Length: 123
Image (cartoon, rainbow, N blue to C red; front, side, top):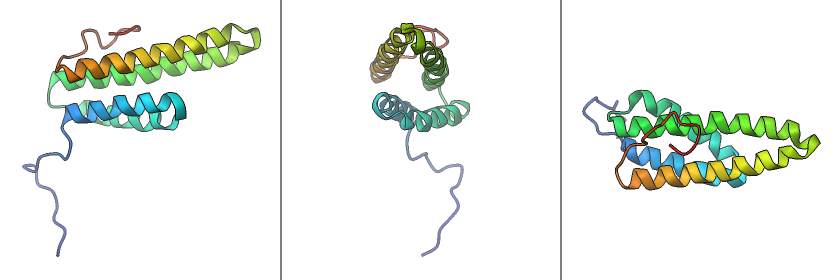
């Protein structure tokens, strides 16, 4: 049995929409483990440039911004925990990340693009 090189006509194993759903699930799991967020970020970063349709591209952009903005919240919140307000910022980040991931997953399930993928709030 020989291995053959994939040809351009071979369909991808997962569609862009399925990949976007996987990234949302990885982000939701990351709220407890954090490591899966890095995996989701890499998938979204790589898939965005290869996404065939605009719907998937909006979701990948939204997912990338979720991690980048969220990292900012975590850094600022972590530093400010010495004056206690950081705990409120970290609580906000957790809730914000949860809402963005759930809303994105539900929007993807309905087959709709993210209305404003560059939004700082919930798209």
